[in-house]
Image 1: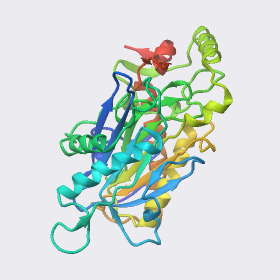
Image 2 (image 1 turned 180 degrees about the vertical axis):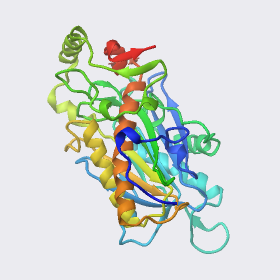
Image 3 (image 1 turned 180 degrees about the horizontal axis):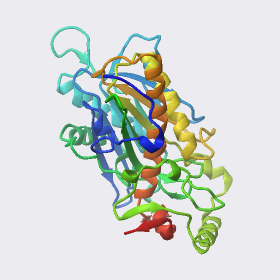
Image 4 (image 1 turned 30 degrees about the vertical axis):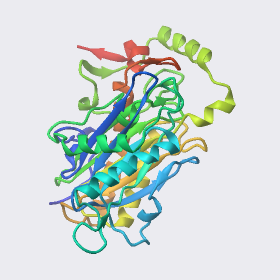
Length: 366
């Protein structure tokens, strides 16, 4: 297997254009969006033997679990699952359900005799409390258990569901509806790099002057929703109406800090060390910065986990450079896809419109 840099116009997505293209990884969602609920949990299973893991936390208000363990200076090399969830800090309880399910299946860090294992499950959450109408409705361990089962049964020959699903169910992207997105690329030598992201930022995902999606210029034809063959600048009338709606729904400043955080997993089948995984997670944040403005604010908990399934060879320095570049690109594309497929949602707490529902003319159909 060889490695080479890939220009954006030469990028080739994997068969599903998602995290499922990294062999050994499976994605499952648990979604609740009725009777006062608008939240959920997403689980990435890292294989029976686990994957080498890293993390980079850059937001000023993170909600995380087991991130210190991923420091390259610390002992545990592999993680067995990553949990992303709604529910703010309460939602970290979803990882308990995943740990129990992994333990029941005998998967975890060996601690002695047969079955004596401790599953390693790093986790991060977004803030979505109250968006379904009832503040107390948030994920618990049962959400993690159901998402684990969904991931275990996932068909990796197709992409996991995206949009208003799993941890992205209650997500809001700078006033528009946020959600889950994913994207992949296969480098010329055959190495795959992919990202899965939950888009819920304080910052904007579009250019306020034109209405154009910030990630739009980085998207590939395969990234566009069904029925959309290209993106273009929205009509001025739509932009004006969007500004008026934003002005009407603007929250008082003291309430805004609670409404943010973008979390993600970026992964590859190349063999990386923990330190290299941490670097991959850091560069993936650069891809986040191309699609969200501002990003990494004091009111976001922006966190990226990186996984290496070690199915392929270890890269040399130039090959690692190409892999890092791809990590940033798939992150930007995954964010763009999340915003494009997220549909309008209305609950007793409010209404959040999908980007293409607001800017209908931004999508060239046919």
